[in-house]
Image (cartoon, rainbow, N blue to C red; front, side, top):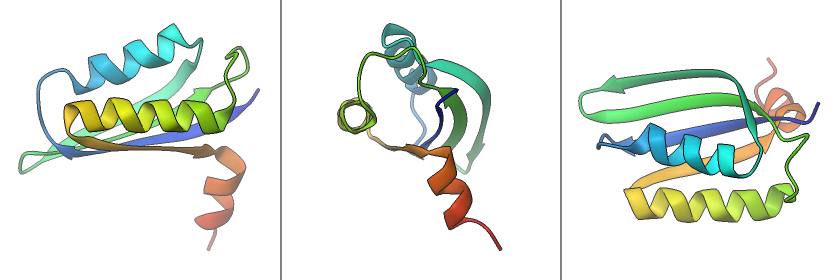
Length: 90
């Protein structure tokens, strides 16, 4: 399993989850867990996903997700689980 952490942050608008999930499905990236909140019109979503079956490398997926984010007015970041875990270890 090639787990990644995906974060989406920005002003809430219709279709954010649909756009991100459609991109992931189209690229064979399986969502393992997802949480999202809206605080005073600001959208925040974090996903754990599996890229095992994706045919694209992480850097390309990252660039394409950034473009999806720009098109809907949010910032999308993706990173390997081990890097995320290492950065947030106490």
